[in-house]
Amino acid sequence: MNNKKIFTDAMNFRHACKIFDEKKKINENDLRYILNAGINSPSSFGMEGWKFLVITNQKLKEELKPYCWNQPQITTCSHLIVILAAINRLRPDSGVPIKRFKRRKGSKDMVEKYLIKYKDYIKNVIGEDDESIFQWSARQTYIAAANMMTAAATIHIDSCPIEGFERDKVEEILKLNTKEFRVSLLLPFGYRINIQPKRLRLSFDEVVDFISPINET
Image 1 (tube, rainbow, N blue to C red):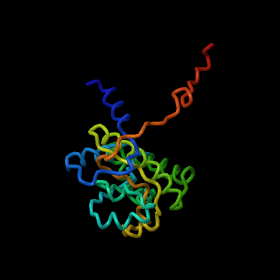
Image 2: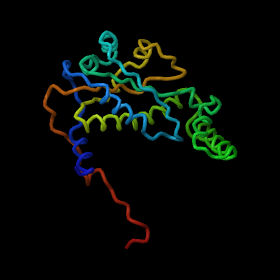
Image 3: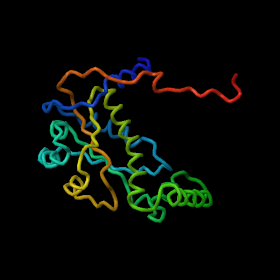
Image 4: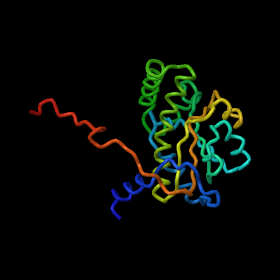
């Protein structure tokens, strides 16, 4: 099959599934395929500042649901993936960034220069406080989330990204050390039980502007 068609079909299949078929469960092979799409996603400076918590325990889902606006996706999904955004491990002095940079197999001098550049970026662009680092880290997780949703759609597995939740309560239930990780978003996966609604999108021309080269007349 044409690769463009595979991708286009997946994008057309994917929608924010509001309720899942509780009787259908994702098998381990398909789940790993979805998670690997997240693991292999790009991140700023190659920091991979994320962690994926996979929840199948129904009691835990029920406990989380009231703090997720009682959305039925939380408890009807096959697997609830909680995407965490890193904080402390992204600090230049944590020892993690230099480990990431050393994977490139460059010279010691190159690694040290890259670490200096990274320190400058955190200090002068991102900000060194917990909230600033979290916001930067969380933005990276959305790349991983998008890739996981598209990967799932290629094998006809549904998803629904959820930002509507009480972060402090969810983190408390999950017993997170919020100096290390905070919840970025919740991502339920499963199989739809209802017919996919008609997709509503702006037209191509409303969204896309082509900027002509300066020398073009």
